Image (tube, rainbow, N blue to C red; front, side, top):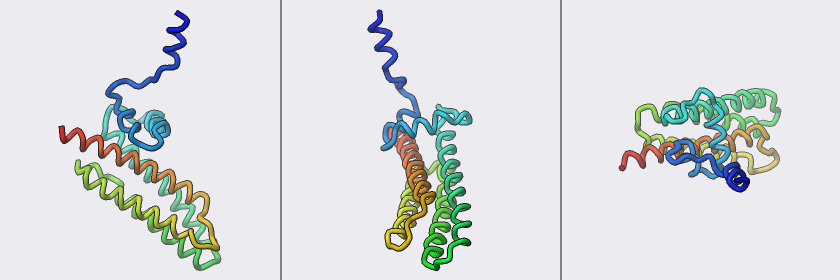
Amino acid sequence: MFMFILFTNHTSHHVKGDLIDDICSKTDQAYHCSWILRTDPNINQDNITDLSNAIMSKIQDSSGIARSEMYSSIHQQKHFNQRTRLSFCFDTYYDVIDKIMGCTNDGDYQHCKVKILYAQTIIKNCDNMFIQPPFDEPSFLKQTSQDVQHLLKILWEICNYVLAGQKM
């Protein structure tokens, strides 16, 4: 009996057909993905629309916070090149919000994937603005880039999940 109790305490809590596990298992950070989606009390975990809306909202929140910090940094920055780089990224995160918000609302998940690819590319372009010295990418911007890229990957997998279901 002791072995059975020990074994059951270490088994996975994955339930066959669990929507979040199905989606998150396809991301490169499955645990983090699952944590993001399971810890939000406002998400119906069995509803694909709720999941996609929650991720889009988190992308908007992260991008908005970064834009606020960039705005302050742009106006405090004395170096023209750094201001230019930050201004480019400021506009980039506006574009990310603009492209991603509501991209699944019309049910065209394939088109949403195109928007995700675009968003991933322009975020990478922002990051690349800081490859050349003398200025490093601000830490808040580097963290935002990683966070938003991860959220975009989750949204990508949500789209894949829906598209795979439409083929059945």
